[in-house]
Amino acid sequence: MQVSEGMEISNDTARAGLDYSNDFRHLKLTVQDIDANIATQVHSTPLHLTFSQKDPMGAPSLPVVEATIASVHEAMFAGDLTCSDLIQAYTQRIEAYDQATGMNAIQEVMPDALDIAAQKDRPEWNPIVLVVCVQANYDTVGVATTNGAAALVDNFPPDDAQQIRALKDAGGIILAKTNMAEWAYSGTISIGSAHGVVRNAYDLQRTTAGSSGGTASAVAASLGLVGLGTQTGNSISGPSGFLGLVGVRSTIGLTSRDGIVPLYLSKDIGGPMCRTVEDAAKTFTPLVGYDPNDPITELSKEVDLPDDYTVFMEGADGLQSMADEVPTAHPDVISLFNQAINDLEAAGAVIVEDFNITGNTLGEDWTGYVQDIGPTVGHWNVNGIWVSLWSQPNGFEREKQIDAYLAASGSRFKSAREIYASGLFHPFARSGMESQLAEQNLTDLESFCGEGAETFLENPCRMEFRRNLADSMDAANVSVIVYPSWRNEPYLIGNHMPYANTNCAHIRPQTGAPSITVPMGFIQLTAGPPTRLPMNIEMIARSFDEPSLFKVAHGYEAVTKHRFAPPLFIECA
Image (cartoon, rainbow, N blue to C red; front, side):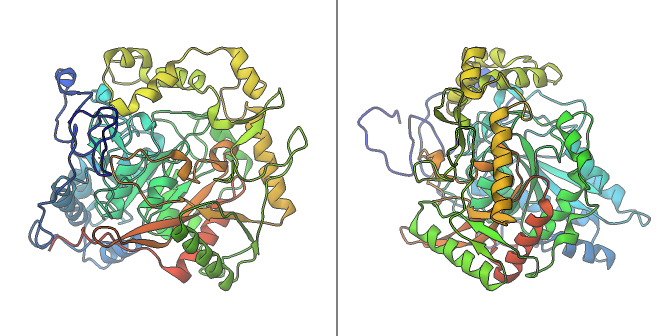
């Protein structure tokens, strides 16, 4: 249907004329036929499943629902499991579930995954293995880095991203590339012109948030052992929060972004999305350290890096002093968060309430909130006016960085302006592209930040915010700040979720501080079929203090055990 002004539209149908149910999902795009396949107005219908839960593919290769790295390794060391068995089990689940349900989390299974697994089946090989679902903005040799965009279906990179190389060196097998929000523009929904919309594994009528929605639904549904996503503001924490996963955003400077399509390099980071804290720590460990191809990782040389982040997991004994921030939110989310605080306190954590980030150049406090809807994400500019750090004219940064990536890529397009002129993007991505290409000048940048800063370390406003965060935590004797990852349940696909409903995009992107998000329970929806939807608690630490995050997150997980599998995605038989 065409959507026109004045029409009443139900929650599960189109908004602004966009099709969120099936556009682009069944297309196999090539460079030659992209132009003919992209439409800007398509009709929308709710998703109706004809999929049978009972026996989608016959007997399973082996049970893998909610498998962990430890359980897989135990079976391998016992001689009961090979790498080939494991890859076959996950590819079976992808074939059984991903397109059959319309979840649409997977872009493509890596063509060499089974061959690599067979090589690791040799008796002399030490079976330490990760089977990884990787977001489509990571460079991986052999499969296009589409970034969710039809314009990049020919973008076959010459080498792997640094994090991919690190995981392979640690024994990892890259299983599949996952769908995402095009160009990572959206934190609210994962949709793009290359592969369509990703649906939430817990309720296929609902969004995953963005941009790492494909990795989130794939890992939640056990289509892979662990996952990698990327985050500028919301894109690891947000989808992890809606899919009941443990998502890790590292300190800027601790892990490399080389080979990841940039959004804003002053805020971009990549990291694990897993079903347990232990798996997140194991996946995270190989990723850390200096990379000459990403100069910001020079910062990692200034700290003593642990060889293994799992050593910081101490059960409930790892809990310590923390501050809680309670924003305005859905009553059920507030109830869950209050219970999470009670659980943390009962397990030995010392809770500091009414925490504020204090001090700035004009002598006023960072209140911790923006109009009572979430943690602060702003600063005083040189003219004494409060502005959001997200409202800065970031296109100055973005266009240059994307052009630099494209210049060295396998894509036929070598600039963002060429892609915009081609029209090869989903309508949902238009505003992001246009803001990226908007004319700007240094005077605008100076009025916002005092300098024409392009990089994280060159931005005086972010550096001040970073110092004030650490100073305020020191003054309150706080190790970790906690708050709900989201203030509401995931919206029905077709609604435009207000980005303000996330708490994930505020403090960490602007300060470079690390965070981890962990399941804190679920909310029960009573409208329509009874549905349990996960909700997460977010934790922030000082820069390079990931050990405290893993201590607290593992301690909380150990005493609550809130993670549960999405009911639709049972074992294959």
